[in-house]
Amino acid sequence: MSKYLVIPRRADSPMTHAGGSTEETVCEIAKNLLHYPGPSEYLMAIPADTKVATFAVLKDDALCSIEVTQSTLETWRKDVTNIQDAINSFQSARDHAENVLDQALGDLDEAYENSIGFKGYTPSDDISVYGALEQMGSNDLEYTFQRALHEMYKFQVIRRHTA
Image: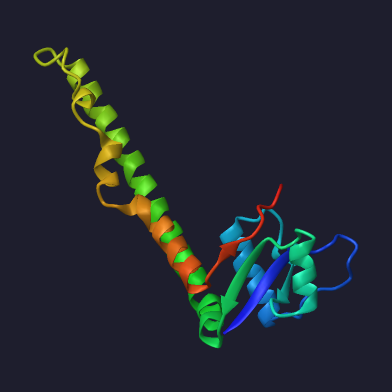
């Protein structure tokens, strides 16, 4: 297992990580887990057991630490994007379903309002479209996935980034 510290890359620094390198992947992981606002190219990964890393901690430059193995690197490269895309797709479908149900409930309210015998009753006063789908537990999907990533990469925030 290799531990890395991630620091912001100075804007004037010509140093970048090679495409497909462990360091590049560590920066991608850090960007995701830190919710870093810029591209991952604005970050640098430094092996934690080096003098440069010690100096970065002393200067208060280190944003986080991440531990990786060959297996967890492959998981990031091959699985994480697919899972994140599937979570996003599921949440989009849930949002669409809520919108369709909300529209149908609006139509039902209108049908009651336009009736002679049932005017005065509004079904939406008794039915919550949005609460129904929350019972599925789908709101926890992203949180649970992020927690698993934090554990897998032994992610530790050292210093909060400022936007």
